[in-house]
Length: 319
Image (cartoon, rainbow, N blue to C red):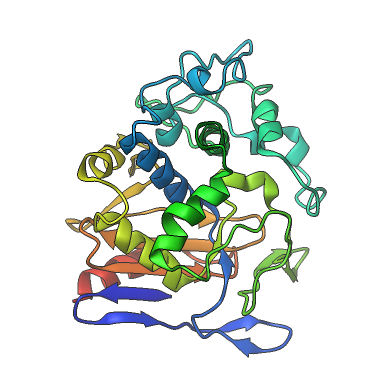
């Protein structure tokens, strides 16, 4: 866990073991897969490009990637960049394809984001969308990564480094590519299968791309969110766009790459993350960036409601 606030300053620490095999204790410096928290970093890049006039939120996907999204169910001429960012595009999640039903069958394989998009286009539209049209889909962000590359001539990984991790001095945040291991020290991650705890830390997550590939530490993630909500990464107009939300159908609200939480009158922002490796992330930051909490977990087995309630109490109590 890492926290930051005006009076408490910055703190990091943890409980438990970072590696069950060696007995190495958690210190708070561990590298972990931050999974879908990556979406907020990608959305920040897209909105920076919007501020520069290189991307327009209400332009169509087809404007940037002509002919790519064209199928019996989907038409990129009718889907905007904003709808990708907000998960209201109507595109299915490529991970819902039968190809991914065997959890570990493709653990070591490389996947191009373009292939994941084409895989999604073969699926029927989601059927469980609320009135807002929200339907969470990793396909949306892999498409956004392709748009960033088309506009800038660089990979989304390069743009994140150039625009976010470099300027903020985040030396422990990286794009893994085909690297299956985490930098040292690592937070090993465990899942229970067949009555046994299995270490699933090592994995090729190239297919996750702009929807969830980043590796970072709790401290780096906290710095990013503090800077984002504090207005250091986006002009006021683009930060306001990011915070325009729609109901997600489960009692929450989703903006442009960010989740809005409200606990007992306190509004906070963040983006949860879950990776098939077993890594999980929870975070919360106040709307002005003054108080921020990031929690990384090396197990898919924990009581999410209790953890979220604890994070809510913690960020309320920070000074």
